[in-house]
Image (cartoon, rainbow, N blue to C red):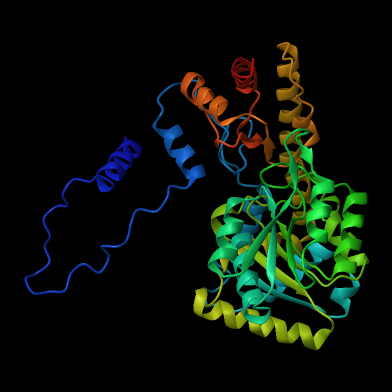
Length: 428
């Protein structure tokens, strides 16, 4: 009912009917916000609203970008619950420094670059705590604009929609490069390399470290190596957005292989980390931005400037989520438990990919579905058209974004057969 009221209220707000009588006192200045129009609805949040308003018992939501267990319920990891118990009543509520919790930053970069990475031993990495991965991206975009004001950012097509918003609002000149090939439902590596070869020296390039969102298509190790050589020869700066370390394959080292390959080739780079997916800390907004520099003094300088950018933006990051991550990663038993739990999440997603593909093939579909299991991570770029997605919603009460992106976290043993049948019907 509440969702219906929200939608009806939105319709009234956007109506061309006369506005209600104003209570502004006579003679007071009015009209400050007359030019403000309703913002476009977020496509993902709109899917969730429509799902919640649907009363059909068979409804399925495969639009949400958050992990669910096989009963379709949100999950709090046991290692996180234990960390909360350790923290409870033992910490104060003081402000963190502008750069965040120092121990959290140290543990985060070890997870990204490796415990014994030379750049860490040489203190060449500037790291600050951020408001999850989104905040890390935005902080770096502003840093890029401030210190490389004439540079460009190259963004893959497609990508997480918010990437475009972030660099646009930071007023960085944005360009795109080919990434996904619809005909193969895989990586357009030739197109990618061709486009990036044309990027001017000094350009920044946004790369998904693993589990590309929304396609689930990642380069192979050999392709990452070839990309690394191109970046080196053409003077391109790699910016890695790593939102799914551990969640993609179940192995945190494997999921960081792209970053390790670039590091071995001697690149300076930057990395945005998020602990939303891999620790289930969605609402805690805990992330880290790290920048690899030439030397330790440069790292000190860069960190100081990142903190200065953060100061007028949000002053300092939140405490609790950083304490949870720090407790888990610094306690050997909790860390080992986290490794096991994140693998359970990854394996469930992988299992649902196999089940969806198997069910579609059993139905006798004439279409190839191998891309479902070849892709990795939370999302499957199904290849469904907008019309087919609309039919799924209208006829079968299945909700997803209109680009055909299926959140595999919403697929369960209880609904996978129904989902496969519906997809088969609309793709005949």
